[in-house]
Length: 476
View (cartoon, rainbow, N blue to C red):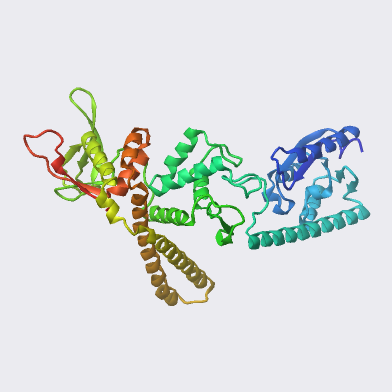
């Protein structure tokens, strides 16, 4: 058949389920063999369609190149289809029949493989093709069952599953700790517990040139969140997002640290998304006249310079009295020094004695929160399914919501105390490194030791900054 379907060119399709190296060598070999067959028959190729690292069981929507080929068949651009083997095309008998119907509607009468030709108009040929599709589907089902059983065995034994991508912090065997990355994880965990944002930590990873392990070479807040929330780095085996037991690999951080990380995520979710930090003390200062929040603002001096200030703003959007202002630089300098000095104070150390008992409270609060959230989900599902009435749903929901709120508040309190504990005694060290920290990290440290400060009215006859105007409110 040298004319390949009434003179129209042919489509070459290749697919491989798992590309472990990411180099596309498997589909490249398929294409090479198909192109050799096309050349031997003197045909012309209209287009080559390649779905790499995609299962035939995902359907046409999950295989964009297969769907594109079907569209070209429907448009009458293709005279025949060439694949390495029939199961590369599809492993679903129903989908194979749909493919045949599309071909027959549009004058495509042949499916050509490296080993055989299938004519859609030949009953015997179609019988063999249908049997081949059924056998492929059965083999795929058996393979899937074996894979699921293997996963279950791995979960029970605390072993990792397969997959081409290794987890960050571990070698290719997914068990051995890669110490160079483990150091990075411990640093990230420490800084996150201290209050630094994901955005700031991602910027640090990029600045340090820390490589990722996935297909993307750029760190994002989502990928960092996945690393920090993973039970893997604490030596825990997870399945479908839930911890099911101990893992067969070594932990990089302690389980207590993981509880603190989870508590920080809960606290930040309740607090809402913060805008990027502009001033060191944004959100921490209060007006001594009306107790309203001071907002960062800037103005030009008569000399043309820009002066940063914190001001009490009036109006419906701010609600302050509008009668208090303080220059930013001196108050930031004074409060920073006061906070770092306090971290080395014996009074703070004494106040934090016995904090070691908070680890169990962390775990208890997280368990209560997760239980309450599951209960809320169950109630919603039961109401949606008609198992309970609206009245029953409305009566049961407040109980779970109250428990969730109480647990979240407890985690917020514990997270704040943990942050101060991690900074305790490091005031002089932080002072030496202060200028090298990002604004976000500086703010997190200040906020941990000093949740707020009140700025009193200015006194006449004194300079722009009077330390007596500043009343810090310490966490401990």
